[in-house]
Length: 478
Image (cartoon, rainbow, N blue to C red):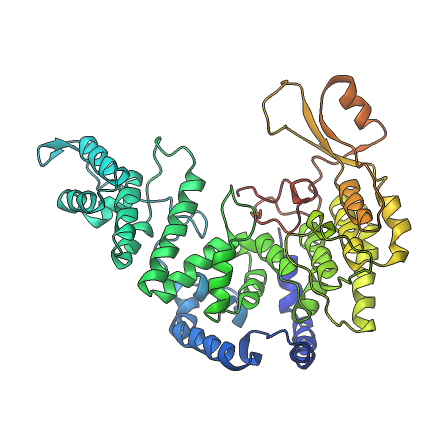
């Protein structure tokens, strides 16, 4: 499938986009938003410069190291390649960028004896020492019988020895073990979760050992792919990257500008869009407006939510908890101009009239965030939307039970609650006649994949309603 967004951003329109962006920076500075990059003030600018110096060689060598022979990569994409470690971090797998689960353990002796004991007996003893907090003994026994490659490749040894070294205050020794590729075996019940835990531990070891390049690469891996069981942002990785002067927005734009044929980065297109929506500030307004005109329904819907976050306005009678139903980040009012608000309103209105339920749901959320009284009639109309999706209930029950949800109604109900209006969106875990009654008059959109990429998914939630309004493209694996 062609990367529509790439052609939009890297075409001649990109020049006007950059021009608009640059024109916003004086306004951003006046609002006290502390932009990243060369426009950042004082210490932030110094940290940004340090990052550029740290990765300057990697940025120069990135296309060569990747053996890239396609179109010229944008500077943002090269920045993203360097900081994510795509061109230099040996741990990343070939199947997808942030996977450690591809080790070649052919050199690991699964049979035979060492020190008069079988392989499995040794591993078992090392695991028991680790579990009993005999960390030094676990490391000593492992070091005497296995090479670093063997320890890193075996999941059980990797965990016992790597975490023991961390507990002993030796992160510089722990990092190469925790960051090494491992071989998934039948004993690894959840490979994705094991991959997440080892990336998280490697990030911890790298930060404690002062391995800044490696720490940044692993932090970005956790930001873009927090793990199957953690669909929200990895806040510690986010804080670390901001503290170290990484221009996160530039990394995200680099991901979105990456050509489809480039290995690794394009798989995180949806995740990058989610993060841009979550981090919406006036600096990102031009990019969100471009995304809102994308041919890709997911990109467009998430951009509309980001525009709603950006255009948020407080209301005098807002209850303290209303926003918790709509977004997963603190809201802040920005002093947007009347012209900027008109641009945002146009995109929201167009999404509200779309024939695609993801866009209508995004528009409902955005309308609620903007908080204009004139939006109530449209929200009440969206609260009667016919679109529903079916899924399997989370809890075990009747084999015939299905979960029915009305994504647009759910978003509209959350938005109307801000105005003190209570609406029941319907749905639930139903079966038999109750399920048929709930479906009556509705439109089944469960399998609607129009204008969506099938090879891309995101593990990031922007709103609490994403489980219904963004599924099945959020919190799923490629």
